[in-house]
Length: 187
Ligand SMILES: Cc1cc2nc3c(=O)[nH]c(=O)nc-3n(C[C@H](O)[C@H](O)[C@H](O)COP(=O)(O)O)c2cc1C
Image (cartoon, rainbow, N blue to C red; front, side):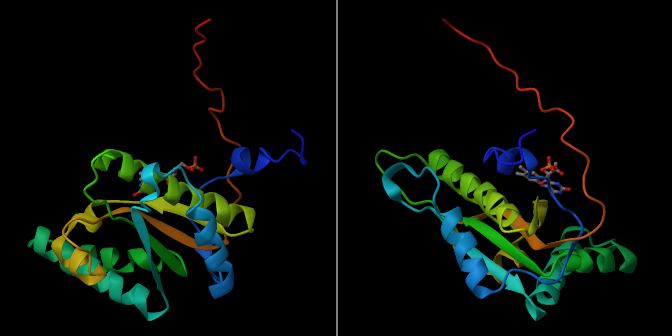
């Protein structure tokens, strides 16, 4: 392993489930989001946007998660709902990457979703480069009407990923176990 190899940025990125304060500050976050926008984007439609959640917003998002859970599972126990309510508190900041596709004669919605996925991953890499930790989470919450309303999503929009951001805490993850790519050459 060559520590000076820029590819080490990609090889060395690991998801960090344990994240503590501080989160990126406003200027740092801006840099990360600008980097996240530098992704392949057919037609330059920029079919994604970011919703940044921190401070009291994390608790409010937890309330929306819990309300969605109660609506989906009326029999959920108070303990289950409390666990759901705490989910956004696992990091000091969450960036919801929202796919915002438009009708386009040449660029189908799946390609626009692909661009949003690239942006979400680019954000995790940018965070890693700047010494922050990130973890991409999803789950059904982003599809729940109560959560969608909380985020003020348009009918055409949906959550590509919840990128949890902060300062890495907890044990450093072991090296990637399955680094060997599956490759077929056609010559
Ligand atoms: C679209 C997508 C959704 C994911 N959702 C979750 C999730 O909800 N919860 C979770 O623990 N990991 C989720 N993951 C996996 C983690 O982000 C992470 O990739 C995985 O733990 C492996 O760690 P690594 O990135 O260090 O290889 C998701 C990954 C992707 C690409």
